[in-house]
Image (cartoon, rainbow, N blue to C red; front, side, top):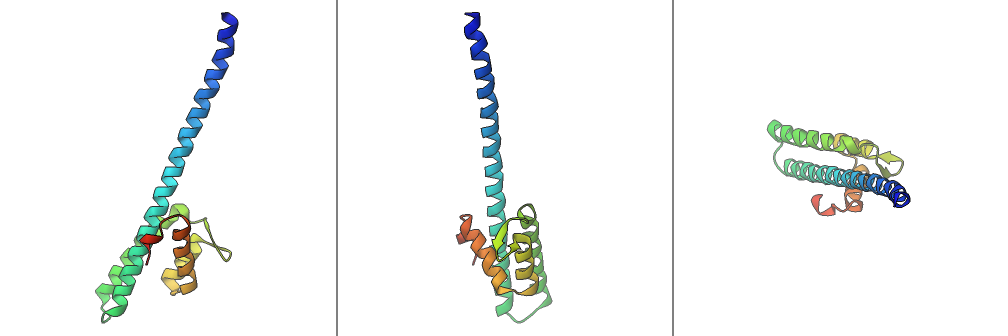
Length: 124
């Protein structure tokens, strides 16, 4: 009986450790998915605001709104900034180029990023 208990204790300890790791990995995956969804949502909001400001007569308040929406997208991008989007660019580099420099290729890369991570419907 003592021998059986000695064999079971390490097995139970191993199960507890692996269950803890699995739970931690699930939490990390959920957090990453939520961060990606938030980024793609903010990117879509920026695209919508930019497009709306582009069709109206330019007013300073319209551009202020686009800038505020862009700031939200930049903040949402920060935890994901080092993810690659192709062309040797990171998500941070492509986002900055798209929003600050009107780089349509960079915008295409970040939209493709959202498509690749499953949130294509959040962008325009």
